Image (cartoon, rainbow, N blue to C red; front, side, top):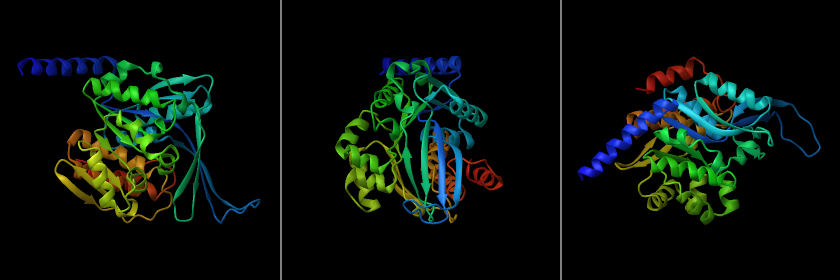
Length: 334
């Protein structure tokens, strides 16, 4: 026992020294940084037809969104990913730095920075078409291992797991983090993609992540379990991931959280939904930004619900902060 304690202390001291020497933030988000082309038509799109609507180019990427929102609620955060050596990549990087997120970028000369077409319907719900840009080309040998080893927590999204590459790189990042005692979180990302690659194949790929915190929404939970009700989905997920803090996002119904103390529900806000793009990412980022400091899942989920509620009431995944979101963060963050 004495030897184990000494090893733990030595590991903690080494980790702290490495973090100071590499200036790596406590939370490192690994994965996609890209651009969203948001399109919300005023009328139904007909084949061969034309209509008016709102079209906007916005900063995106699920992993990058999580990093930004964790930083916005007060967590020291970094981002690790691959982007094209082009103007879009330069602009995306500049925005991360402006937000205070520390970037660790692998540049690609062969692939352009990723772009996602986001179609927003009249109810604010979105459908996405993702091109496979540089973010899909991250390879294990390109990972800066010293940066990952210095982080206290690593977050990975399913967009880094659906195809290979970048699956092997994502799994390697999680392995490095786990080996040095860091915790890992995972967002399953897309129910349609889970169905396309198959439930069992997806679970085989993600089991190797050794996930400490997971953020499925209800449709992703259904795709993963075959169950329908939130209660049944959460019950099966807890059986399959017994040591994982599970955050089941339920859109306008809030969220159900299962941790070591049991299950509790957090209510959603009453905000009017304009655009649901980035709602899940903002929930993850705000939750991690609070929980990793406080270890209070209920308080973290309450803040996350407030942040996600504001995000769906505006356009884009991480629009400019205004007085309302600043007020919510100050009120619900300790």
